[in-house]
Length: 122
Image 1: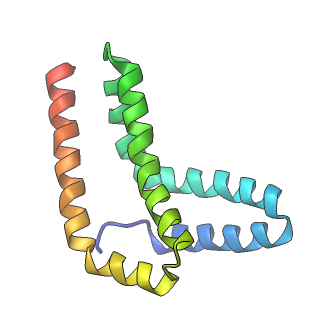
Image 2: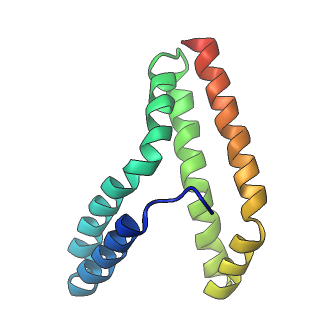
């Protein structure tokens, strides 16, 4: 993949997750989550800002906020369910690698739809 966080930032995220969580599970997970979120916002912030602009100007803002949060959480629930049902880490990686192109194309469609909504509503 060409578009991803720089190696330096990914390395920092990994070291924070490994170092913090192993010392104190709850506090470490919280600190790691905050640091990873801040570092990841360098990439994902380009998506959040237009979505928040769309949501804030819409009459159906609560519906859009609920939909946005459901779409954010849904992949996490699917992966958690798959793991709880016995799917191993290697199989998850294999599926991820096999469907990377399809996933990227679907995300491109979602982003074009969001761009269209922004143009039509702003």
